[in-house]
Image (cartoon, rainbow, N blue to C red):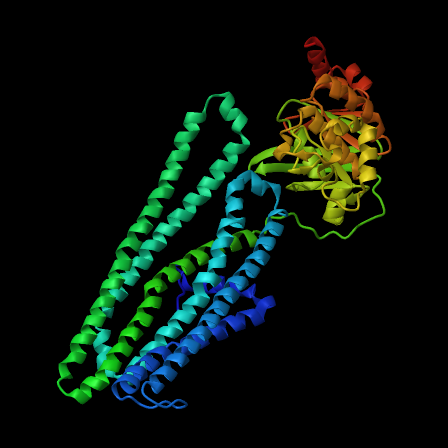
Length: 596
């Protein structure tokens, strides 16, 4: 049987099985929900039966009660029983609704954790190709739709279907002829339900795609707001946003139109069924004995039809909720099934890394067929400082991104201490390498949380000592709250120089064996640069350091200079030897000196 949610029933069934695989830790809660759904279904015919007994035996026949005597005693007992059962049914429905919703929240919590765990381990090239807003939608919006599989989807559908079967069974047992007459308008409802379900499914698919596009668009524009305002591009961006928003509106309106047609149609079919019931049952009401019997039956059947149409009215909507949940689950599982993460098969965790780095004929490309590094080979001895220079786009940043395995080379080998970097445990390798970039990223939180990255093994005293060493302690203490100062998103409340100093503190605080500085002083003021220049000899002492810089004055004290152009090594040697060689490094120095 094909389940809703995908044109391929096998795929939909597999998706549903995977979703319910997350219920295993909560098996008892799931079984409890199913048990309550069975209880609700079994309970459904009780009220119509009691209503019929109240009219036929309590009112028409004036039957005596089981426990009470006198006129109306039976009717009073039946009424008390109904009130008792109604209260009990209310508690059962509460338990069913709460347990189903709780199960959904528990499953979604676990799925969201799994998705985020997968996302933070994906290769960086995935973020080069996928808008951040799309992954945000998968982690937040789509998983909320998965939650509805439990709260408004499959489990409630099971309860409603069982209730419908139970009511129909009771009606056929009471009078099969009248039941068939009541159900005569149902083919119209079945056809309308199918059309409604397909129409809403298409609309909701379009809504989901529009929501994903909106998330991606807004996320990117908020991140680049300074560029938009600086170039007075607000109106162009607003026009583009309005177009995406219009698609979202139109898809929702199409769904609203389907709802506006379907629900009145259900009410019409319900009225027709009741009309057919009254017409058919009233044919034989000449005989007073038949009148007495049919009065209770008609009242019972009217209540049955109400109980029947209540789940039917929302069943199609619940199927759409299930469909949307299945579609959302499929998207979530696409993220979970993404295997493009950095392999972590190494098990080497030595007490320390000396920091000897060797590139052996390394080839690398971000996009297939567009090489960034070609047959690249060089070496840095442990404890040395290597400066990498070259034109923009020559491959300098790619070199350092390969060292700590943010990306993987297509061919060749990179070794640290004569061990291929793939043989190290990935987390261990990255903890031994600290990276300071030109564009410093700070998270919302305190100064202390940003420099420790919430590593509880680093004490406040250690953080303060590292800040003092780098000359950052003074400005931190001047902030409101000092180390507890709340940093805005991306560090918007701090200057570029302050953010850069914090990045240096963060790097040194983790006591790396290898320190990488990528244009770390390119966008800061001279005073901050002077502070950093004074600190660099302290922080590079005793560890291997790689420095990329356009300001050649900042690298003149490096042990070795590596000149890169178009993904190939052009020259390598000390500052003095390369100046004597009068090659590309000499020309870069001349151009830099002439620009002063």
